Amino acid sequence: MLTNLLRIELIKILNYKAVKVLLGLHLFFLVMVVFLSSRISIELPGFNPRNLLAFPYVWQTVTWMASWFNILLVFTVIILTCNEFAYKTFRQHIFNGLNRDQLLVGKGSVILMLAIYAFLVVFFTGALFGLIYSSDTGYSDLFGSFHILFVYFLQTLAYMVLGLVIAILMKGTGLSIVMFFLLRILIEPVFRSFFEPAFRQFFPLKAISSLTPVPEFLSISSESQITTDGADMLTFESMGLFTHQLPLSTNIVLVAGYTLLFIVLIRTYLHRINL
Amino acid sequence: MGAILEIKGITKYFGRICAVDDLSFSVNKGEVFGILGPNGSGKTTTLAIVMGLVNPMKGTYSWFGGDIPSDISRKKIGTLIEVPYFYPYLTLSDNLKIISRIKDIPFDDIDRVLKTVNLYNRKQSKYRTLSLGMQQRMAIASVLLGDPEVLVLDEPTNGVDPKGIADIRDVITGESEKGKTIIMASHILAEVEKVCTNVAVLKEGKLLAEAPVSELPGKEVKLLLSSEDNERLQEELSRSGIVKTTIPGDDHVLATLNDGVTPLQVNRFLVQKGIVVSRLEEKKITLESQFLELVKES
Image (cartoon, rainbow over all chains, first blue to last red):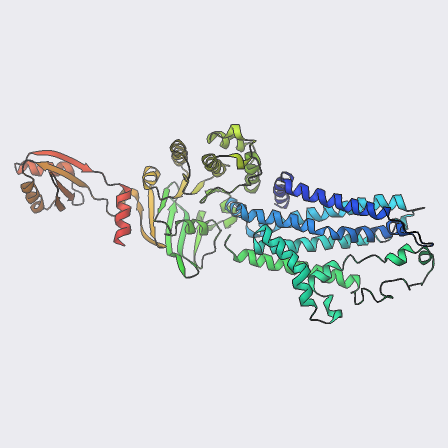
């Protein structure tokens, strides 16, 4: 049945212009931003910003840049889910013999497909620019920070699941998008501000966005830093920036937990409502 | 005949409004079962409950004797409730492919159903380009996909032109002749009368009557009678014990016969009494008049 659900969703996606446009924009913006960043040149001795695109740093740089465009993936999920309410096709699927869990699994398969798409886009973009801007690349360099791609994969999954939750609750595309933005830029930040800085990292959107942190621009770009062990004076933390960050492993567990919680909540809600 | 659908004590409120109130009835295999009722009587809510869209607050229902889960049961049912629901940006073929995949039906059947509803030449058209009538025919095509054992139709002729209505009626009659069970809610009573074998009449969510069409309450035979002396005709009939009521008209007497009494017996009786009947006409009792009487009585 899972394959069938996936094929059903593919019929809907592959023939839908809006999805093609959004995914095309996602690819275009990401490649353009990485390309433009590769054109930046700073005339400072011992300072080479192109190191950011060399292996293994390129994975961190590209995933961080890609995270700016996760919003387009969330829009795709919101549009596809809200269409089901607007066209009342969830109802039709129920008539035809799907149950409510299968409706959710169908949308879950869309999210999985989009996350794999985003993963591949980031992988190929990173690999391309990494090969161009790395010298004497060894395998250890190439896959040095490769795990960050899987962290990015989790991030896209978490964002899109949150988008799904909002779309099912709101049912309208416009309202869902506005709600997502409000949650991202107003509701959670305001709510977070009432808590101690160390505790703020545990909020869902903060935890999700922290999965792909800003690369250590200064230390990576500084050629002396790359070759000098233990010189951490140019890290963000040493400069008092991005303090109170959770360890990556803790953050991963936290986001995975939130994602599961979102799924359980939306499943419960979907079983209770009249479609 | 086994029950295809059995509803027991279903109740549903939307806020403070009672949409369905302790409703129970069953539909047997091969019946063309009409659900009648004025607007807001609970017809669509009842169908939405048994099709898994709306959760009842009380009561239960089961399809096919309750041996298989309701979502699997629904794969054996062709359903059209209110208006057709399709993806407007997809072609007719792609829309039907989605349904085929859900119901595990081979794609070959898509051509057959599109030909049945005369939409085969529009197979590759986007659904949004269809006229209202065509959309309804497309909905019928989706209902027939996979040759389901049961059809559930809610106002199947909504928005369809007279030719389309006749076509849909033919489809329903054809499916019924194949032994299919059809459950149909409609407010077009003439349509229901033409195709249904059994009906349930609802009002404000309550079941007023459930019976074969021929046995509905209020199905008495009424006769329009005229003679040279209508006054005497009415007098004799009133004393005869073969009629329930007599009502004088301008140039006739309207008599409601007792159960089992035939117009021939009435004519014989009047001849014996020396009354020459110049007009003896059976007044056709339509489902509509019965329905209105039932709804009014309640």
